[in-house]
Every structure is written in C-alpha cells, then in structure tokens.
Image 1 (cartoon, helix red, strand yellow):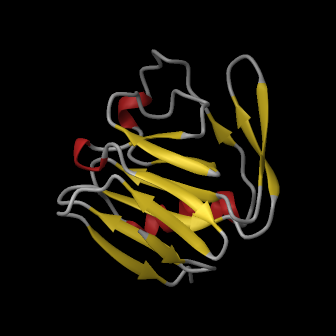
Image 2: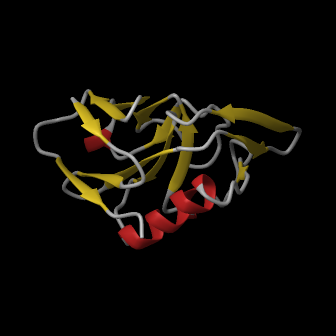
Image 3: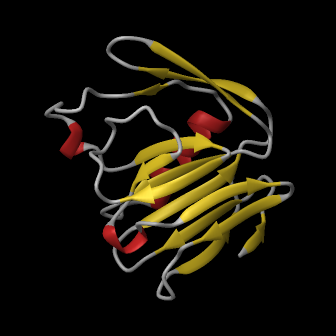
Length: 151
C-alpha cells in the first residue's frame, strides 16, 4: 500500500499497540550510541523515522520522540543486550530506508535500524520510504491507518 506522506505523520494502530511513521524530509547523520562505539548512519530525505509502542501509550509522546530525531537530530542510545532497563522502555525508535517490525527482539538493545521492536499484532509490518510517501506491507487486516498533523 502506497501512502502519500510529507511533513505529516502516519499512525498505524492495532488493537493494543501502534506504530508512528514520519519521513526524514532533510538528510542528516543519525548517531547511534552503543556501549562500545558510535555508529553514524546517514539518512536521506525519503527515509523514514518510525516509533513503535508495543504496549500502546500516548500518541503525543510518540510524536515528540519522532520529532526529537527527525527535526532535532538527537542521537539514539542502544542498551547492551541484557540491560535490566530494557523492559521499562515503552517506545522505541528506528530510522532508515526501510524498517521491519519484529516482536522477538528486546526493546532498545539493537543498533540495526532496519528492525524495530513491535507487538505481536504488528510484527512483520514493513515500512519503506519512497518519493513523496511511504509503502506499508505485511500488515494484518485489523489495523487502521490515520494521517496526523506533525504540529
């Protein structure tokens, strides 16, 4: 499914969780801070920033997280794989040309930006940035799509 998207956002809702998607719009270098290194990932204007809330939560918080990365270019912190704080992370962010939902990874512990931790109901969803919008594939029929104003 091709969805037009510019400065606005796309909310993908399941029954108990959601994913928020925005286009990068202006290329920049996303810094990923790990325990051992800093990884610099270039992002292009058609790439996507994706926020996943596997347990749901306030959409406004997801909008703020997305804009912190997209507009203010804040680095992302990646926790070590067995970090005790991982279960307390309610929302996670990934960015790149394509992001795929996965319900078997621990939140906040992987620097690979092509994956994002999701609930089981949104696992397998594939979001890809394209010129003037996004392509969404692999989604169940029960989810809904809603355009949101970024402001």
